[in-house]
Length: 438
Image (cartoon, rainbow, N blue to C red):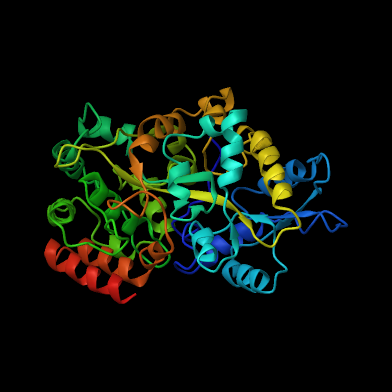
């Protein structure tokens, strides 16, 4: 599994959700491979992509893109890197002036925002064509459906950002914990044993630019059959399932299983606590061990999805995607390029460029990917039970989820739970009102 730049310092999923942390911008800026690939023609497909990984990502991505050899009257493809800093303004200006790309990635809900403006070319014909060439069946379970709106498929899944359970093997051994937790009660039991050796069992943070804490809150709502939105895509937060989930979170706080300073911790602070062996267990992205680095690449291990109080499993994940625009020299040309791209993008994972988790089973089945047992476990056990922000009313994304991803409403809610001085119902009621007003 490639090294993945943490997403907690900047929300790559939501088109309008949150602002970039300075540290993340600095890292991401170093990923750029420069501009386009030379001259263009009236049939040229402009592909804009983001710096999804380490310094080799965009270089290799450009090589794959410009290696496209179109057939018939289709045009070649050019490549442009769009930095995360101010990317919303970059796209907004280009799309409104019809100077933007024919195909791009971007924020996770970007396609749904522009679809509402009539700027997105729906991917239904492309997806239908993939049913005959094997690509359609290659996608991991349920992913394509997360892109479906009442007017068609607004985008195609590209890479995954996940929230999963991590624990330290060495600290578990020191605390006398024989097995990783499998449900809420065994999680509490493990926390109690970790506390006895001076270690926090719910390693978490919700400081400036760190949205992983709020992701964890929603993930536990989903784990208990709840979530933020109903079947009408409206916020519906004050439910029994959500109350039970937040009461579980509050129990962890009140029993001293989480760091009292967690509400102020940035992603860098959280990683520092893992390095200091003050965190023995917690929820984070699928590459936490590589982000922490050193011996922790082998000491930190992905656990099994927990069974919630209602007896089911579930977690929050983010299907980042690629979209097509109506402003294209040829819709068939856009589709032909994307078919080529998806058939040839495997090296972005097999050559360790840090693009996150793959959406295609064929990439997950490569020897290079299978070399990382944690990544394999995430794909095998966590992806099939994970749901999007739209849960529990559905799993297909929509523009309205931006009120929850990386917003002050979610940060304030998370910090109130981490403070431990509110009731679950009161905290959820405040969140409900904030989401509705947003």
